Length: 319
Image (cartoon, rainbow, N blue to C red):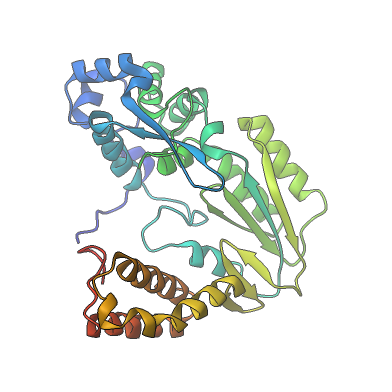
């Protein structure tokens, strides 16, 4: 797969954009299509919920708007990202995010509460004007196209990159402030992590107040760790200079692994439950393998067992 070269923000076709015909051309649509999509508003989306125990609302753009969202996401992803951003960047992951904080450091984590629903249309419009220096009417059009019910949708491929870019000045400020206090900062979507020899007493309250006053964001799930204790950062356990798989995930893997002989029996090879089982355990093993290579090896062996048992993969993109 060809990797597109990254460029600074001021090289983006969206930078200093002030013409709607030019915007339509960049998005590969007719100017009349942009007007129709803006006029339709929330009718451009399908609404539903995900999750059984704790369902949450989800808003998914319909086909015509989805194409524009994918195009905008592609444009935003081509822009060079700061070193502290660990999500939505090729070659960086939740594991890399955690490993940035390896060592015997004090750690504090802060989550932005309801990040996408709290990223309003006004935040998007204002953020586009400040980050891309585009005209007010272009920023308003892009904000209309990128939001539903006046906030960023939860079910769009554009949401993560747009939420970051419109908040780039705020996150840059937090990064600079962290450095001034001798702390390392990483961001994974809405999860802010800070580490250093010591977390200053007033540091967390400053970050919380800044997020509230500059963007209206609330924060929650504040978690502090001393230098001597294990830390859990974006699903990875850090113990000093070592990264480990969470105990709960190890237990799930162990339980699933004991069931492999049962699902390898010939009578079950075509069962939907068998196909789903192998998909699940292989997913767990390779996910854990990002932290501990031994699990990756175990995942490869499990794939070989599935194939030997004649069990097909759940889909053609599965190993």
